Image 1 (cartoon, rainbow, N blue to C red):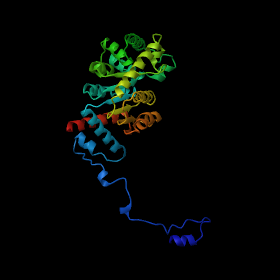
Image 2 (cartoon, helix red, strand yellow):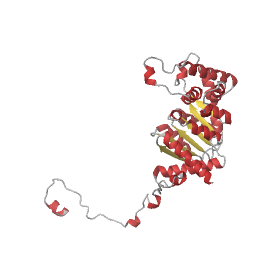
Image 3 (cartoon, rainbow, N blue to C red):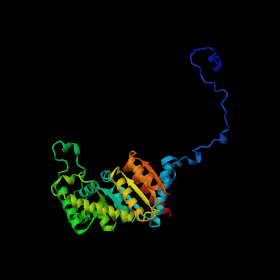
Image 4 (cartoon, rainbow, N blue to C red):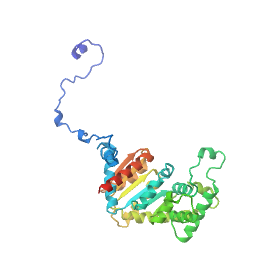
Length: 326
């Protein structure tokens, strides 16, 4: 039965639109977003990582990731700035050895982290373990009250403030004097060893070490603010460089935006750079404060969503595959 016959049957009380007069056009006249040339080129018998990565589809985030890899490799090869902003989650997902290696290779110009990052790095280096079970200890009032962590980091900050050091340098210098069990996987110690600025940005009352009586709020403010100025000093030379944000949703996006504003206010031309947010879900501040707003005057911004323990090693392996090719 044809559509006209069905309509004549009067089965429905409602009138349907007659579309017999629609206008159509040939496929050749229609713009398209995807071509077979953009499809992935997969070769399961070839174990070359570069071949695998370059064979990913030139579509959506895979295309973005390829562009970020090419850009980052180019910045590193010409000695430009690569600034890493990282949350503590990267340490807890086992990525510290990747970043210590990158620092030793000279790939990272500055690494900025939050206060929890400094705590986890300190414990991992000193004891070989970190990240307590919050739920298990919260009810008993024991959460965050490990004495070595609370006492030693607070003492390091107080001493550093008196000597004019930043937060990161203060904790790194103190940690170096403790003969830690695992110095090679410490971001703090590697930065100190390689003379790379590692800045720590803290909101008072947000870290477990703030629960201890040794806490000196003035010293925390002094050292963390000095790290803000150290980060700003790096950002003044960011033109043409790359900023990579890994897993900080509030503190570091806010710190980055303010530090960038300061250097622009002082007359430094920091407009054309690449900003990339790697995270597991989309958040407002990383998208606006790092990816979108700062790059509107000529830069480019990207967001890559996926588990850190998978996406970040994949990204850096691809960067070094491109660097080896020249």
